[in-house]
Every structure is written in C-alpha cells, then in structure tokens.
Length: 203
Image (cartoon, rainbow, N blue to C red):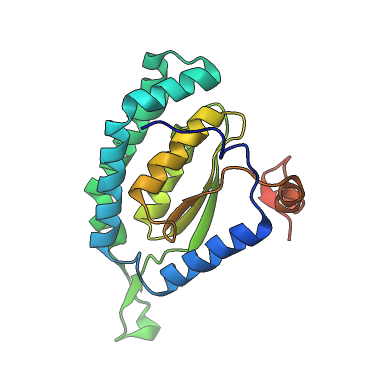
C-alpha cells in the first residue's frame, strides 16, 4: 500500500466534515456499531491491515521523521499490534454489564453498570508518534462501539497518507473516516474554544 500526500495537503471544508458527522451519527443511531461481532470483525480487519502494511508504514515514518525502521516498528507499529490483540482478547469482558450491590432501600431491585458508546468521536494525532497515537485511540473507540473521525498530524504527510489509505481499506466512511487537513478558517474554529495550556474544553 502506498499513500499520496496530495490529498493530505488539500484542505476540507466545514460542509464536508458536517456531512461525515451526519452520516456517522446516523450509522451509530441505527445501532450498526453496537454488537460484539461487529466490533470484533472491525478490529480483526485493522490488525490484518497493519501487519500487511508494516513496511509501507515504516517507510512513511522514515520519510517524515527519519525514524529508523526498528524504532518505527518498536515505538509505533508493535505497540499498536499489541493494543489490537489486547482489545480482541478483552472485548467481550469490556462490553459485559457489571453487577453492583443494590442499597437495601431499593430492594428487591438489582443494579448494573452498563457501558454504552459515546457516539461519534474525533481523534487528533500528534506528530512525534504519528501512527501509534492515531491508531491506539482508534482501537479503543472502535472497541467501545463508536464512530470515529481521525485527524492525522499535518507535520507528517507521508504517514498521514498511509493512515488514510489503511483506514479507508478497513472501515467504511460512515464508521471511521480520516480528515486530512482543515481549511485555515475551520482550523481556527475547531480550536477557538479549547484552552491549549491545560487541554480541556472551555464551556
């Protein structure tokens, strides 16, 4: 698999992102992502794609950051592979409701903690571990039953291109989509309500 940086350098509009969000929200509301079998199949496809494209991912990270292949594999690819394998092995347990003690005043009721997905989430990946820190949170979001928009780091265009190709080969866009580059006004809008000093949303 090879990625083209042409699409990485072309900004996307607010309308485009809104269309993706609306489609993903509809996909989520229809219950597509909620079943164990759907989540497991998606994670298995992701694991296979990462393994199949190991060399291309290493090459892309070298072009962007001059990371040697061994460093790229140990710091990015191997970590991600282990994360997917962990998610696959623990997914059923993570999805299971947890039975809790019910207060005497509420007897004979029973109590559970039920883990529901958030819906549509967005991941902003940094440049220093451009593959690891895009895919690792994606694994958790998919395992939790969410739809996802992934924004790779613009400082690593070759890795961003590979991420776009890999993700589009694994997921349909209504489930997981890659947003390669914001147009400048949209980028300002996305961050104007974020306090970057402490990394929390300002309400």
